Length: 613
Image (cartoon, rainbow, N blue to C red):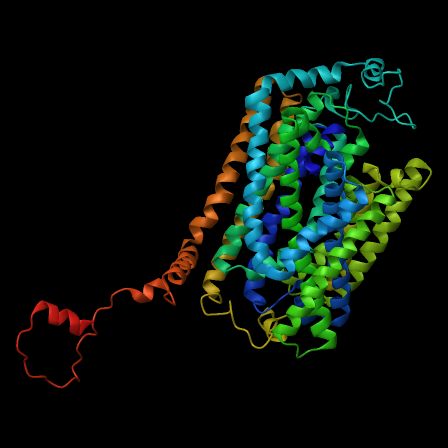
């Protein structure tokens, strides 16, 4: 939802930096995923690995940051979801905040992780179906790239007086500026952008948002148990390619939708103020404008699919942390699989209810989706580098990780508050949400933590950890060895997979963060033909990702799907087992140890068939 939001106050650069800055973490997490399969294949959660390597203090520390990540991500889902449902249906915001989690609770508590994975596939297909529908409507059915380009030129051509006249009521009262005199509508030149244009990569706000976005999303990927549980569940051969393809396909969502719905909202100058945009109301407003009620329904469906898919993963993540890292670790070390499952289901229900109430409280405090999104790096950014070091650096100190995580967190909060006071002379929700202030907190969090952990591990408490001993400190539940067979533990295969994802992950990160933006800078303001090419790339990327994300899983799972249909056929026909069991078997070959048998009279073919049967 957020990727199109920033276009109302930023530029085309902002949406691209959202897309690229939130994709690289998925690409790089593939490195951690393969490292996990290599050194800690028995793990159920990331905090189990922390406990196995660094002990109890670090375990409790990173449990705190893991819970913060899950709560922040789920809060954003509910804040944006409830605001959109209220805008499109008129439903009370508080009621929507409380009811949305039940869509997650019902099937997640019943089906667990398997239901989450299966539902995520179908939900993602629907999301991409809506995505390509919106791209087609904006740039093929209703408008074209040249028309949107002309509209955007017109948007920045208006003077402040003209903008006030455009955004005014019938009585003549203008709502173009807020009480502080700040612009709230997308009209006139954009401050900080080259020539005030929306179609440029030279944007001060875009650059600041891009840095904030990178830091925050490192937190919501590396510190989020939902990503680790996907890595734990995946086969080694699938993990590396899965995260790489997942990142590439995910890039299409903000990139293609921002290029279509986001730019359309600004080009058409729809009456969406900055507060509404910050709540995620740009996509539904544009869809309703272009397609009427049908557009509103499509966005609601897309929104529900995204919320339920991500919400279920977050619910499973929290339930896993509590079941394995609190209940089993500190209350019942001999817990059975049945007991852990029971605890998980209770936690899923409680977490859903808690998040519904928590999102209502955040809204009452005046916090919206955009504000929380910028803030997340301040809270969880300090845990990122210690977790990366845990999986990749043998010198990483556990004491240093604890000190770095907490010190980075405290310093980030202090720097964030001080920056607001220095810039605005006061501390409020509005001043704390400014880009410059949020940038200060985010950078302090990740950089100070990384520096402290490096210095402490290098000079104060250097370790020489043997990663081969890590898995022995992690205990299985009822000695469940599923997914731990020789095929999954092939060290040569793991090394090849790690080398494969490392090279490609780093290369794509370099291209998305540096090469692509740098190549776009010489253009300064996009020409009509350059913008048309950009639109073409976004359309092709959107369609390519939709095809890949829909068909590739079916192709890779054709054997398992065949078994499912085989079982269904056997059930219908009254047979049991797999259909392959009913294939005609050849008689066993005669061995040299078998006694000689006298030749028998020739039999007719029917008798032979009967004997064979």
